Length: 434
Image 1 (cartoon, helix red, strand yellow):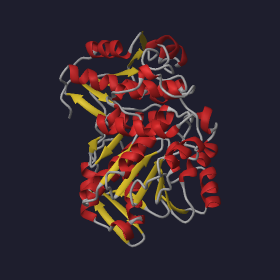
Image 2: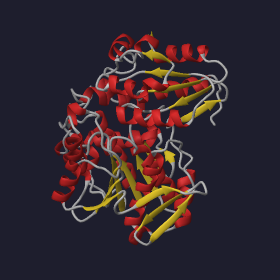
Image 3: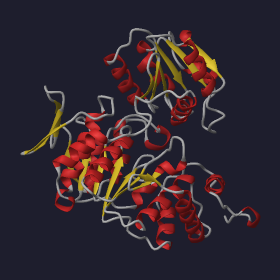
Image 4: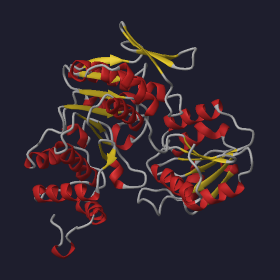
């Protein structure tokens, strides 16, 4: 499908709108179409070293740790992540800066010229654009976050020199399977024969391990091939064989961030023959890594916490953090979700930690968004008895903030759309980040 001659995309917004109309489906897994277009573009190498990062949760944070560590060591780094929070440009970073509109528009135009009659999804356009930009930016290392699954995700077009799978849990079951084994097999598809494959959790499903064995990957598991633990002095220690590092705690707040940082260190350890090994740079990266909407705090009393938790595993981690950081007052939740999410599982994981629920509809933000009424109906008692429905997330945020008193906290979560609305809310009210 070619664009209507009278509607040729010009601006970045034009292109993003156009891409959502090119393919009849928002998601179509498979590599044949995207590989064919990449080959037509000449299939340039994105960088001498590529790290692919997959998993159910923790991918974006792991990318942030790697990006900060590598930058601290003087490497030229590119990073591709999704989805974005406030601007599409966030998805493609070169040397720590978001891609410009001009560079994205140029890449999209080249992709459009090359694709002919091959239909691409919105995500596939973005992946090809990131790879094109990286290939023409003289980078040392590129970090590629998998969008959905692994084996058939567009990112898997590129052979990673090292691949990381952070965690495995239930999410996107319509595409990946109904159990951890099935999902693990799909995510193991980013591994390559003879190349290091980092597994960030100590108890991965058998399906992932079996798939890694069939692929012939050089598997390196947390708790077996590398270890990490908090130190009495307030830091933490990472160890693999006779290599030990004493590191500062991450600025990123959740307890799970130690596992993400440890997986990132394991990837650099696997690449030390090509990239060198700098404990000082690793420590600086652990302390300096930043990423938005991961237990990000705004204001003082009351205060707002913004998090992208959007599946039961992430909700359990969020509940653990809430228990570990009690407040004198109440915890007020602002919650919204997309239709393919386990709303009941998310709410159940957090029910004991939430005093009141301000439910916001997302049907105006995404075709996949659930309305507030459907969300309320999906959560169990007693959470439902403490839930108030609002048409939109911004009205739910305003209501929760108006209800909050000294000693309370408001936490917004459930979707990247919720997180984006909460970040805009904080900006509009000039709530200082802390």
